Image (cartoon, rainbow, N blue to C red; front, side):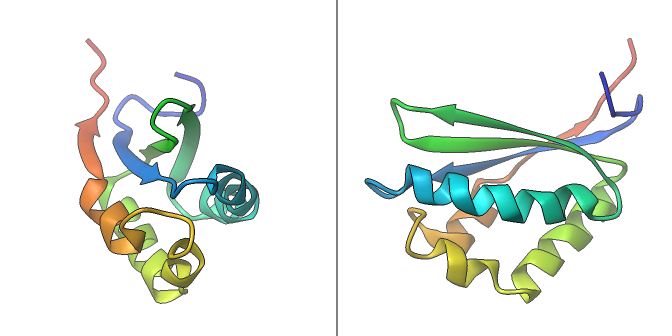
Length: 108
């Protein structure tokens, strides 16, 4: 997998947009994900949009789960919740609750 190592930690976060807010979230992602990709330990992020459910999924690859945990704490501490509140169903707390920690990539 390009940009990832054999043991990358993978997590998926779900961002269900409020009606009419998909473009606003895309705009926010353009700036916010640049910071995420520069965060220590981030190897790659894939963004997927499902038009039927008006939901974005972020598939994130990190060097270690601990790096991902530090990133989530940094995002919480730097106020992403305020930016997401008018855009996302369930706000930041909903996003945190949606995170599915897939685990480490296995080379089999």
